[in-house]
Length: 209
Image (cartoon, rainbow, N blue to C red; front, side, top):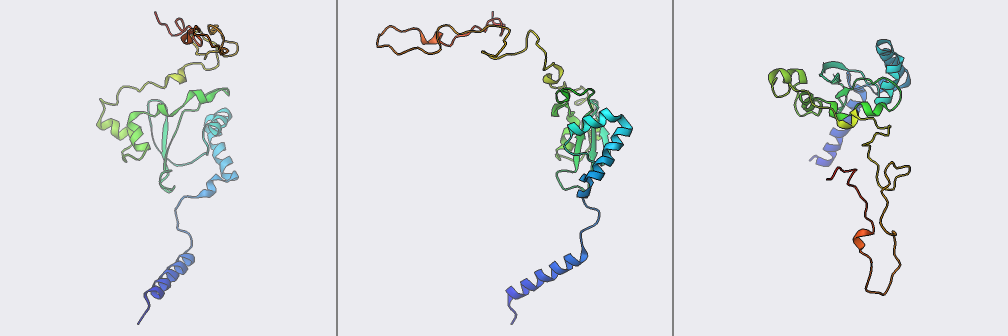
């Protein structure tokens, strides 16, 4: 009478030996593409197509330079790619338009630039690319989605409406406090109004009539 534990170990061992003899599966995600030589190869491809400055900024924008099949492009200039041999969850990605210049390029792109018709495909909600979905539902997705407001506002200027918290160094508007910040304790019943101790006038800043 055979022992089920022994039979199970034999089956596992047989499968393990067969898998080792067969070697790694073919046509799967190749991690060697992220080596130095292949990184430079991809960098040179972008440099030949868009120039050195664009290739440099693209390297700053993306954690890795990936290569896949081009799927489509939306009205914001985002380009969508897919690599079906990559691990699940990493097969689809978006590449934003490469901004010009070298200063504060992080202010020129963010996830709000992804158009609605491509959002579901990019996040694996469904398998219809954005161009197919837009053709089926032209009216709902015809209007362009406004880009995040923070991307259209200079972050490093000193505009009149630029927010500055109270007590900021070199603040344009003096927003001092009425009375001392701390008050020594007194046994007297008559004390100052605590509501005024940390009072600051935001009437002009917040446009309150």
